[in-house]
Length: 283
Image 1 (tube, rainbow, N blue to C red):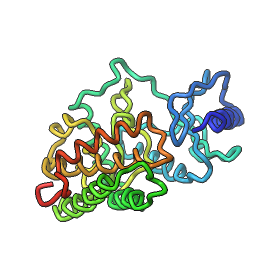
Image 2: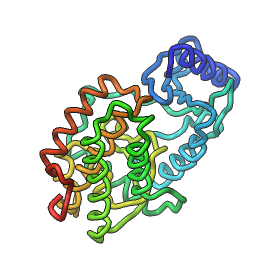
Image 3: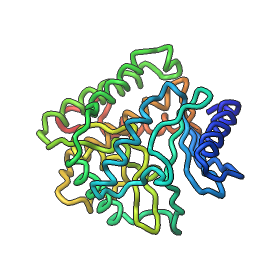
């Protein structure tokens, strides 16, 4: 968020928590992107704040509650207050349990895989309407066709990304891999190492697809520890995810630090993997 918007978002979180009887004397911003994550002390509650238009917050709260009830390793809403979405000053605010991170924070690959397997097992018990992972691929493809949104992307790179997204999406779909509810982005930034073990957060990107799509967001070592993972499908999913995140780095509104440098670096990796003609049957 921009500085002014961030200040208003923090104020909204403080006001909501105080109105619910939680003690707030200090607000510490832990993460700032499209939404703000703020630790409120001394009541020690975690507030997540997003612009009011992002009504996915209701879905995220409901799903986290259902996953926690199913025994999934997830961070749940704070039990001291009603689990709901609060609207304040143009923002939606949700309140979550804060978990103190353990040291070292990096979750070992075997533990990471075990936590993801438990999450997927619980997700198979939950029936909620979610988009398909190919809907997210299509969002990236639409970004590529909108030159006003991606003005700095060279035509040859634009074409490479478009072919890669289309080709890999088709090949993965034809693989026949079983599909289920997924986290959508279970990368290390969405996994907390806590005294309770690894806990997943941030369910706004949930979708349906093969478990290999989720695994593609985790460090490569994790895939070797996940039982039954199809390594060929996983390899293709990793390249597909790389093409998606590379596309997002060229969005003119992207706020990822050093995004264009990373986008250029990742384009090189994609070209080395698929060549200049895009992925075929071997991609």
